Length: 119
Image 1 (cartoon, helix red, strand yellow):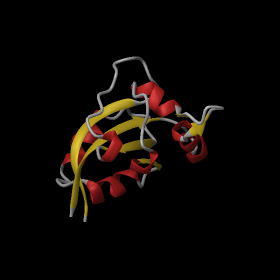
Image 2 (cartoon, rainbow, N blue to C red):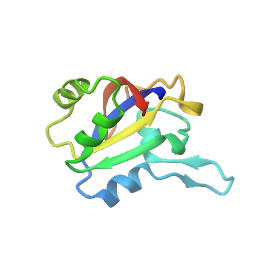
Image 3 (cartoon, rainbow, N blue to C red):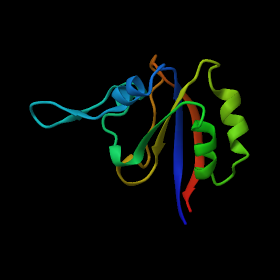
């Protein structure tokens, strides 16, 4: 079992394509990567190998498969805005370890950091 910190963000995007585009990694002429999600949460660079976009009602069921304590789902659901349709999961491993998130206005809400595991 591999354990990690799991940073959970929520937002409303209406379509899976819009949510995916928001989190997509793009590259400029200098081959520097950017994405709107990382800008909005105040992180210079995310390792996109450890970011997942989960759209739709199945996001709750999927999240419980990652949580060490599945009862944390209730806390997450209570914290999410009522119009949420997407979770962005940032796994706190590799280059994402030790991230801190800005308090700047953003399109997503930070719902907390939880203990996760791949079983």
